Length: 369
Image (cartoon, rainbow, N blue to C red; front, side):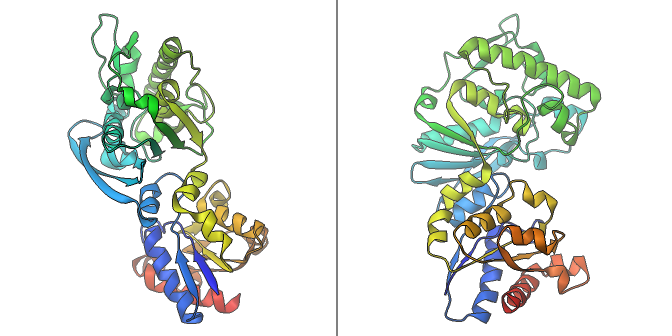
């Protein structure tokens, strides 16, 4: 039997790779002769880099500017001529203590420095996972790191961060890194929010970054100004569905590079070779920390299940907790599902000893399939 194990992370407990290894122990306990393939997955945000590394990409490290200045050490990955970057590693919310002030000042500059590292390494394709951002700067900081000058009415560079864009009057692209013209930028973004307006980056996502109502209004107005400058400079309307992801980060790259917005899972599927692994599988196991209603909207485990179902391969799901009813899971081809909380009543125990319980839950799911 050929078994494909393709889970996402169990947030707060296990990485996707660790979860896959724990599930593999359970599979081999039930089917000792099984041919097991591990393909940790992600949905294009947090976990993108880990999935690429698990698939054989080489880990790289760079010291770059953090979202509020100062240096941070950020990981990225290189697979052949494809670079994989999570903007959160350089410009993430996890790197700040969110407040109104940080929401206005946070910049994507360090993410641009990671892109420059990738260009220096010879990358001709750059995959960007853009979840968990601290900034609402429309990608302006990243392009500033790559040579773009954003100027106020006196010709002085504007301050970093989304608030600085409220002073922007002109763009000087003469110093922009010419290598950007020859690289394909693939941005993993599952949200459909536009750059500006009531459903845009500032109003929908600014609050989680510390912005109050006044700050959200200021940031939205700044992004409107930024979109106008980008269109004037390049002819590209960047205020489109998906451009509001990660504080509007895609906008700058839609204007100045050959960038595309793609579903996060589709990007990961290609990076990890998931499609090829599915072709040879007899059984698929997947899971994540919580299989719930959110899982139905672009999350990796049910996307894996759908593809297995379409190929006629049965799916077993194991998760920290499962709130989706069996008939809904069955729609995705899931023939058996067990949560860690089916085995242990204490959620803290389930998280603290997640690997052990995940292996046991895998055994139970397979024996009941």
